[in-house]
Length: 308
Image (tube, rainbow, N blue to C red):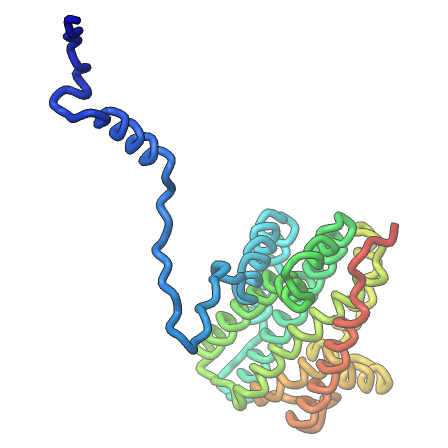
């Protein structure tokens, strides 16, 4: 019987019997095979290496993200920018130019202290206190604070982020104004420790009082009313008005936390006057006690959910 001479397919030409099927299987396996990491068993007597779940979100990273978001919101607030330019920069410079320093070192120290006093009170209340109060109240009513608490962020990180924009502004302006007063007047602070402690203490006091005030503030519009007592207390504690007050008001001014900060500023410049704390260390101890009390109260009495 004659054999059938069929031409082998081109793909199988020159290969032995079954070679075409083997090639097809190899190609199919190459398409379906998933590359895996080689398994390297741990030596006998040692525990296997733990499986990494990826980098963890650190507390510093969470705080940076929250603080950056708050800073962007602060920059978009035109009212805060206006208050920054007028109360933090404009009014203190105006006070410095209107007061006569003369050649007497004591007079120049008083001018520097009064300028720094005006800046610290106005910037701390109008920018730091009010920005924290309004942001905390608004974020609470929008449910943002409640959602943040359900995530990885801790309470202290959320609260610190709320305070970051105002704190940054106050520290920057205080540093620039302090250096500027010293350079222009030629009068350096008598005790820089008291000056720094008064500034940092004011930040803690204003931030804590803002968080406490937000607990009794129903909405952002009501913050204009609930912030009024703090405004009056801070303005009445200013050193430039202290001598005009009656005795009972002077006692109140030098024993409240705002007044302690002002006393430290005047002692820092060496320009303390009648109606202030007898010494800088006395004012510093009082301020430290106030910071602890207000900080703990703000942490535990802060309201995270809306009144509605």
